[in-house]
Amino acid sequence: MRFAIISDIHGNIEAFNRVLDDISSRNIHSCYFLGDAVSYGPEPELCVRLLQDKKIHCILGNHELAIVQPGAAKLFNQPTREHFKHARKLLSHQSISYISTWPEVRNEHNMLLVHGCPPDSVTRYLFEVDEQKLFRILRAMPTDIAFVGHTHELEIILCNQSGIIRKNIPRGVFEVEGDKVLINAGSAGQPRDGDNRAKYIVWDQENKTIEVRYVEYDIGKTIRGILDRGFPEYYAQRLR
Image (cartoon, rainbow, N blue to C red; front, side, top):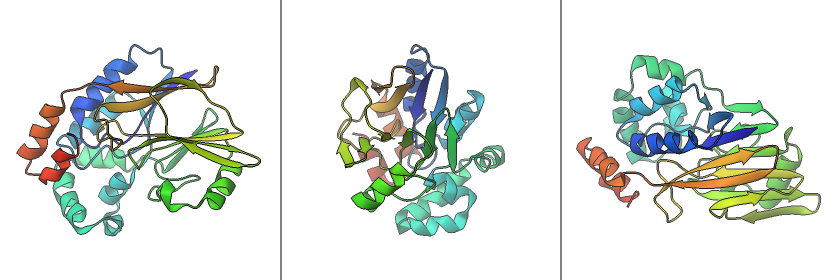
């Protein structure tokens, strides 16, 4: 089976629509979303509705956590905490209710899916975990492969009995090797890897290959939407 893995849309409906268009031509069995549909971008409501309409399997991101559990906003800096007040107003009661049903982790088809760090952290970044602890986490995983987001940067971590190897993921298709594998799927709506195109992952379970897809979209339209919302200008600058 082939799975599409999307992460960190962040209200960028232009990027999300183009990613879905690309997925439709890739012979995909099902699609998973690793969290953070809201905040920063101008259209969180449309993104959440589209996730629901397309029946995409979702997990909770740290930004959704701050929406449904306001106390979680304390983990963010002050400007972002202020931003949540505006972002929440852009979401319907129905969408907030839907978000509240998203699990913090999924374990399906021999895949572990979590926003931050295995086994089940929504908020922890991979760079906050030292190599020895990460080795223990990966060796203890109940699945052979895990997918995370949160950092907005593509990465692969290969784990075998002797240790772990961390690599940036190139664009294109490559075979996955290692006893345990962790893939950071980057970001569809706000990549921070120096390339502003939308990113997502295709996992071919039978052939054990990962394909990193780069998708063009109308970045200017998203930037105008951010500014029209009155959001901080640096949210728009991040996309340039």
